[in-house]
Amino acid sequence: MRSFILGFGLMVVCLSVGCGGGVPGGRPPDSGSDGGSDATGEAGRPPGVMCPPISGGEKRGLGACCAAASDCADDVGVCWNGFCTKTCASTSDCGPVVAPSALTVGTAMACAANKLGDPISYCLPGSLQDCTTSTTSCPPGEACALGLNPDAPAGTAAGSVAYRGLCLAKLKANAYLPAGETCQPEDGPYACENQGGYVGTGCVAHRCTGACASTNDCPLGTQCQSPPYSGKLGGAVSFLALSGAGVCLGRFCGQVHGEAGMVTGQVGQQGADSLCVAGDVCVPTMAVGATGNTQYLSCIPPRP
Image (tube, rainbow, N blue to C red; front, side):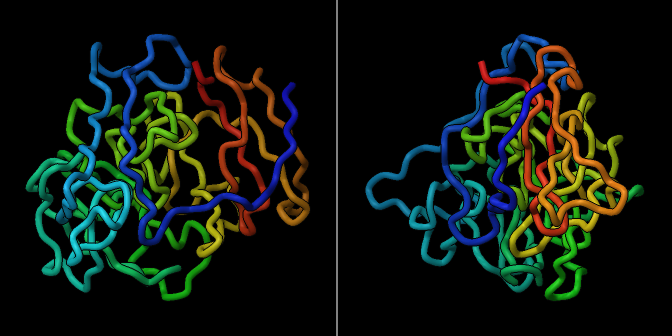
């Protein structure tokens, strides 16, 4: 049995200007069995491509890779999840991805409308169509990422109601790890083929992830669970039954509540490695719940 001493509600969710980072990303697939994914990837898949460093006062355009807003041209000015973007009122304000980029050059960017939290709309790569309904799937070259619901009323702070799956362009094919693979969060926004959207990176709790409406949307060995708590958007009143958009995480292995996180009739739990597939460990994954004072525990592959 593994016990935890936790600080609740401390998770910071990346939303605004300068959140992204141009950290060299990606790792080759590990050869060991972590029990959490059957998607082992192609043998010899290369690690993620590094973002070329800025040199000689270079300023980069829309969709180009970046480490900070200062890397981007003045008419762009925002570094979001590792690429340059800008605020927009409509898709006509956006344009195609330019080099150098972890995205395929020429990918069309569209305006992702946002009235929640910080009500700023950004140009994002891909069709941005809703992918967390039972009748839709993303076009080729795109994957479902956690986004903000453009149809939610301004000021909404009701957890999954505030979120929606958005189809975003994948990073360059065969250069990054697919959903379900083992990754390291500190590898930054280029660790995984799928983008993380609102959560900032596709690598969540040591697995490449994506948005989902049910576990059927997730790679084998992972489960669809509630999105993380946000200081701006709150969290789902109950994360025991997902309603709306969530994220794919490793196997559930417990939950540790703050005093306000308990609901009537609910009992406290602690995590145990024995609840995981052999080789995985049970750890706090993210702050969840209506007030962010509950820690969701899931099975993850240990570090090498």
